[in-house]
Amino acid sequence: MTTSSILGNVPFAEPRHAELPHFVLAAHAGPWQLCGRGIYVWTVFRCYWASLYTPSGSFEPGMSAILDLSYLRTLSKEQTVSISIEEMLRLRPEYSNRAQSWRSALTPIIPDVKAGDRLVGCFDKEHGASFYSDQQFLGQIDDPDFSSAFLAIWLHPETRAGALREALLGREAISPSAEALP
Image 1 (cartoon, one colour):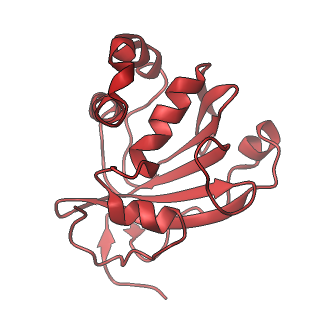
Image 2 (cartoon, one colour; image 1 turned 135 degrees about the vertical axis):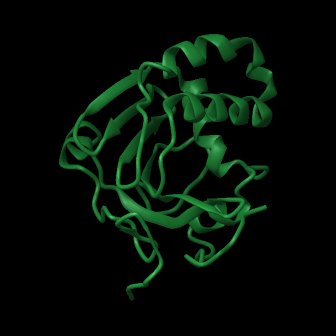
């Protein structure tokens, strides 16, 4: 189904990218199956489509996962890094002493994004997190604790995006017309 709701040239009805980039799949052998997909909405702003992939098509804490974000609006790297670190520490306060090192590691990796851009994160409990755009490898943080804390932003039971979490876990669809997440 298509929809007439459009931000820039990106339709809300479905993410712009249907498959993971081939170079991500080459670097992270699968199989990867879609677990769930939904839109992240902050107040009234639709920020991005999020898709979660796992080897089995379902998610359990501690397993490898790929999170694919297709942006619907512009965000600066400073906004993305600051919000990410803040949420990681809110959900995992035991890592507060690592905030500065994680910020320093993430800042050169995460780019500014605009509507239509894509960021893909591959999270592995043994090797940490690898980040990609839809065109290239962006960087890696070899820290399994970082990987787990970063993925918790979307999948922790106390995430600020509870409806998106349910959609990513394949439990519930998110309507493109939803006005806000809790």
